[in-house]
Length: 264
Image (cartoon, rainbow, N blue to C red):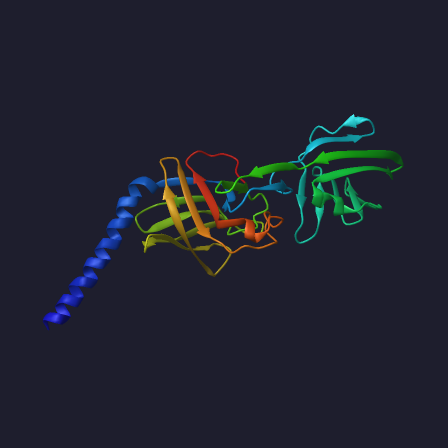
């Protein structure tokens, strides 16, 4: 009987301890958090140069019919297909040029991009008007030293991405907010808890009957919440051109902030 009472008391104490963790954290978490950036983080095991093909716009010029393209927010993506976008209206994929909702077959090898260069001079006729596009862009080169920690922004959402863009901690147990299901915005409702030093989020969305369960390491600052996990190396992520033996301590971070700002 005594053993039974002791066991019951121990369970109650464990339960209360768990509740105290959430209650204490609630002072820091209470309220609304907005989605910030997401990024990979790793440490270099040796000195090496990294050609940053993916995470930042390339530098240089794009000239169309003699005029420099001003809104050149260029992006390169290698997965699932190799594609280089100059802006929302102009992009290259395989042997195709996409220009203002029309496609044109061209003789342009995207292979040169692997070396961090994109140079071409292409002429087409678009809706009866001659168009000449001259591209001269180069990717950033990053020098990494052994032992240096590096952050690489994941604009492509290719890692351990959390598809929540507004997260409310309503009580020591409940969460609400807004999330994406595919390309559809959804309201979410759920619960949160702390177990073994990790934060668990369990929620469902109004357009889905399924519950989503996610678990993260966490760091709370006054104005920033970091949710992160170690991840396995993958050549399909945006750091994939870095040899696996060059890096260690690979993590993926989801960030939330108190102020509404543009993240990923």
